[in-house]
Length: 123
Image (cartoon, rainbow, N blue to C red; front, side, top):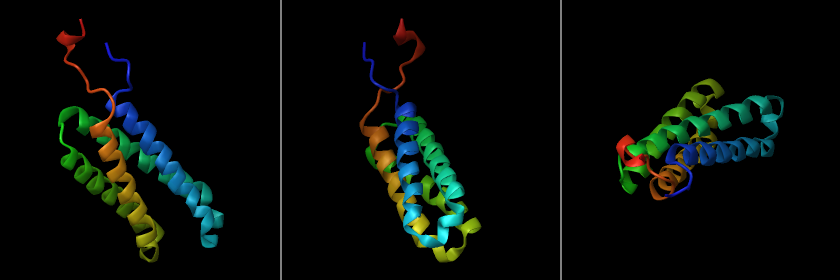
């Protein structure tokens, strides 16, 4: 019996961690100094949500290209929602790291982690 981490939990952990790191990079932009709590919170939340969705997708479909593409699309959508609030002048700084995060989490949840087993297989 495998005791490795499940794909949704891996997605949450990796997405949350990468989202936090992404948010912390905001300290490199002086114009964000007064908004750092919001930047870190939103980036981490975006990573957690993307990671959870990617973990669930990885449980349902076993396809590396689909995982990477889905991660890219979900992260691009979530990042765009942030751009709408933050302003289009920051679009590149928000969208590109977010999409990279989505691709990494999409890859990792497809490649690693334990897939869910049907209920009858657990007995």
